[in-house]
Length: 151
Image (cartoon, rainbow, N blue to C red; front, top):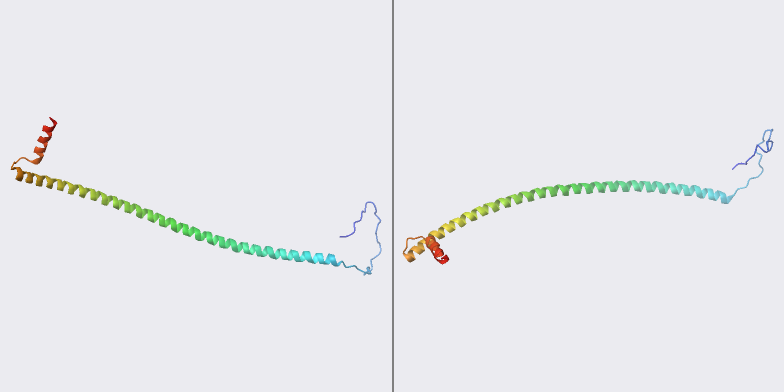
């Protein structure tokens, strides 16, 4: 830091009209502590810059890794969603097929039940005819018995 001159108060202070002869300093004083502090500041600044550069580089690498991982996660999520959509479609197809099979099964069961009932009627009428010797069908006799019971 240089010397401060208040030229307003002392306009003629330290005015030299002659040429300065060099070297005009006979001795110099070195302050080892000040030099050490200055070196420490420079070294600290250099280390700080190095640490900041290293951190920036590692942050960049970390961002790259995170972006890569995010991309992989999104790809996996898309694959899972695609598989779920396919699975849902297959499930719906299977349900339709099961409903179709069920309706066919009900139709066949009804057909067989009708055939069995018809066969039972014929068989029971034939057996009744053999046992009683009457030509009246069994259903006619059952209706007559119900009428007599209700009276």
